Length: 338
Ligand code: SAM
Ligand code: SF4
Image (cartoon, rainbow, N blue to C red):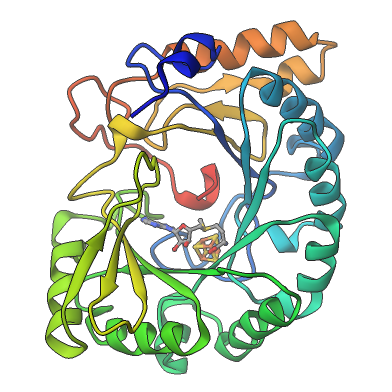
């Protein structure tokens, strides 16, 4: 439940009473993997350097957003760690007044190199994407032979002192069924928090259809059949999109992000800034607000605040539409920031 006082006081409350406190910032659309569900194998048109926001521009945007009530930031991409000196941005964002949680989503390949520096720069939390523990399958999914570096990266993040690291595994039919139990055991043994994510219609080449969605219910069935019964854990008042389940034998915890079968639009508190400075109020929104234009044409903090409020004010009830149905969009996760 929303705190009624916060609801009336927050400038980022939308028409449906949702208070926006979370901003995802994509720092690049480039990546060192080519996951088949996210990017085409070749010929991807990336933004040129001048198109993407500088760290100073991102900081200015965040300062205004934080004054309006944004409290949590997540740095993402593309692959955020391929952008030069991203630790410098982390340091800048960590010191913006009002920000009390700074996280990053990464494929983990470069964590061996950067984990300690990210921690020192003020990064609070890490989500690492890992869909399989099979090297051959990893190569098939990502079109690169990088599983060993990802596993080393996870270990490096733990050595650097990151706690409660989340592992994100995309669940796709005919691909992920055999991965569910090994990934769960891997996470249990290392004290990592594993979440399975339903496949959303945001793929590179329009291959998505409902058939490929391995649902949260099916994942629970596999887990309780092979590892033992689970019970739901309900964090009171949580706006978190993941529903959490605990193994009754005390053997850990998993999360399910059921974006397709149980969308969490009614609790959505997120905005997204793409690397080219467009503000999105929903992954599926067809409308964007051009923050870069304002940032580069001497826009004042008040004008930026107006742009952010406009994006929140125009947010639809569900999934970018007002009737809750999907409007297909011609955009992948790497382009908007996952
Ligand atoms: N490169 C980083 C990574 O892979 O963690 C950050 C960006 S990536 C776009 C963020 C997350 O989006 C990954 O966990 C990935 O599995 C997820 N993702 C990509 N395409 C998706 C889709 N169509 N449906 C659901 N999740 C998707
Ligand atoms: Fe890169 Fe992440 Fe997309 Fe995979 S999911 S291609 S790692 S941006």
